[in-house]
Length: 339
Ligand code: F6P
Image (cartoon, rainbow, N blue to C red; front, top):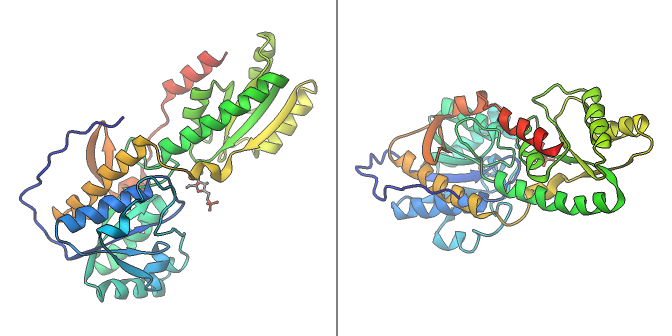
């Protein structure tokens, strides 16, 4: 549970901004609604007008923008997804798209935007800042947990809870039928979800993008499991791994171990849905709040993140270009405890 000692009054405010726009962009993540609510209500509390763009940058370009009031964000704290909807905008990558977006902001006197999303979303926002001087505040919203400048991204906790709930169920069948299950989880080209849920579900092996594991390594793990008479096994596979697709890996194992009953489950987009966990609601509320406070204090082109239970503002350029290494000890622990 996050426990942050908030300083209630941030004074003196530099108050360098006019109106604020909030949007969600990229893959949706549980807790995005809680972040929109926090941004909206904090801005209103500080007498700022706040607008929301539908479908991320698409709405900014197409002028699909609404003014938000305190009622607009009622009863959304517990809802998964994002009521502002999300998109990965191709138009925004073009100069013409950004010209339209900037003009729609200008006519509403919006000079600051809060972007809730991942690295692609922040890169787009930086372009708008370079070209039109719009102040950008990022809020890390992605299940992948792949942003530098925060220990956790909004949505990651809920996604991992969804994974372990499913894998625990899969384990029942694996155990009843003496089966080996390959479970594929998301994470794009990172393995945070796979590593933590692999540890949390006692996976025999975890196949990650960050490690160049081979089929031989996997076969060795399976042989050891057979020697120890382990009858049910889970192998957690991160989607961006180097070994290949989950079906390919499963086929290779079937060939090498014809006696093992091998099954495959891809958890897919179930990981992105559902009501956000307590941790995600708290994180989203704090980071959304501090995103607005940061803008009012004159901060721009940074991401509000949480490191060691303290809010930290990291330049967006670093948040998108740097990486945090996976915890190697966690992987060692997972390996030792599963064998
Ligand atoms: O970034 C979030 C994420 O869910 C990744 O884990 C995954 O690779 C990707 O988005 C899937 O995107 P889409 O929703 O477009 O299929």
